[in-house]
Image (cartoon, rainbow, N blue to C red; front, side, top):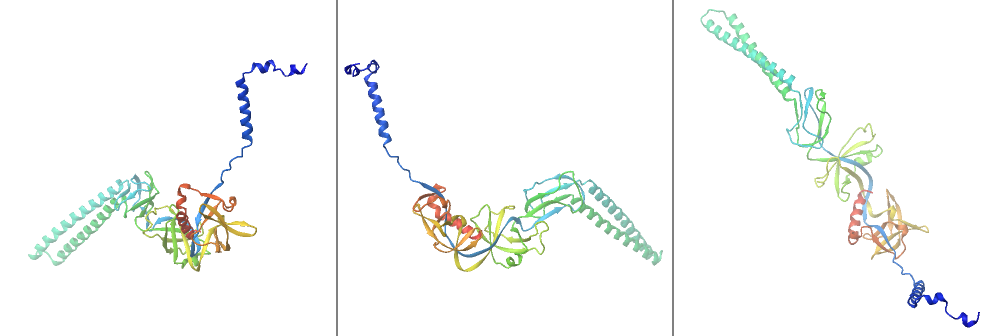
Length: 391
């Protein structure tokens, strides 16, 4: 084949439109250009949890969990025995003084009352007859128709009849009270905390069937181990808080220390009064009681999760202007789940408490709960204040 023949376009090339060839060339050129472009880098922003540093001169001795109870809680029962025919309240019901709670079958009690009433009427009839006899014999004595001995016997019979009437009256009043005891009523304003019997059950006199907590003063009951009873008995700085409201810390007072251990838990019950300011405290809520004492100097406590260890040095990440800075600290000891710092931090600084191993100096961070980032220091301060009591 001659060279001139090789330069001629093939039949396949002639069959392609010129516009299609141009489009293929442009696409190839764009692909080559894109390969040489550098990828844009996105800024790495880490989400973290923070806490504001706070100095405190309070040393937490111990903290115990308990529950809120009424200071006065009565286990009510019928004064008479019988079969329950009506239950008028459920657990959790708010009751008033004098409100009916349960009723017994009153038939036997009503019959006993009727019998006592009949006995009273019989005694009154005998007394009235003895009285009439005494009056008649007094008239006869005035006419000297009877002796003084007979008159004295009639007088004695009247006095005995009168005594029988008084005894019958007392018996009737007693049976009337017994009939009234068929209805169990609340003797205080309060809340029903337990119902221990139901319709159809036969109960003996005094058997507790309803438990009512009196409205008013409340307290927290905790169990203290035997090795700490003597140490905590005289502590005056007692702080209480609710699990549902951890930021609300109030001052409490130990009202009673049980002289004997609970047979089940082998701990000694402490009863701590709740101040009137804790209006949100409801019966059965979980609460915490912390016993604290004063220290000569204020200390800074930070969570263990905030500590960052590198090359034998202890540090924490401080958040400033949306970025983190590594600050070395001096560790003074351990207090529960917190580290006690002797130096390196100042009160008011905001530190990272979660995600410390994923950070680097100068890295931008976002506080978890981004909509609250602006108020993070205040929120962290409240958290630190609560943790200062409940470490």
